[in-house]
Image (cartoon, rainbow, N blue to C red; front, side, top):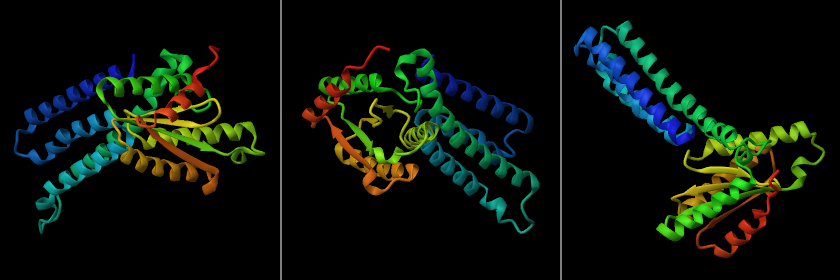
Length: 264
């Protein structure tokens, strides 16, 4: 199973569960307590966003859903007699459910994407980072350039480099932990449609589909600062470069430099 199939399956099962729960609640209590049915209705879009776009977007969707639910409950919250226990419980459970689905669900989905790639195509996953490897990075670059050539689909590629000083004197186990922390940060800070890979020389490559240079530069600066913080590195120890389809020479050089990957 690839991630696209998993996404459709997760959304389908989620929709069935939400609608089933909604139907049971209406059959039992009717529409008299309709405000407590809102979490079920809002949970589905939170699930869709989390599965499709990852943890950051899922968090935003969860916050919006929680705000909408609380806004609907304002008349109940402001009653002089106080908030009924049932309504207070519904609010707490609803907000908690939004958070679990949006944040935890988005984080799990972000990991599952590469787990599927690891077991379906083991030669495409880097052992240390658990994101795509150099061979897959080359393939991603080529496909992005082909889509731009055929459909004028913009893209941005961010290459993040660090100096050897970061790992100087560090034991292999600690080096591996730092690499895993860096890949986890990158994977969690980009969209689900974005791709993260680690090259054989230790650089990370992030492909951003449907992204122009201006937006790519914004993401580059954010990821650069985040990588420095994650690695505990100085400003000069980590650098980043943003390339787009207009950077033909640089992209050709990058692709050529990582093309000759051993088969094993």
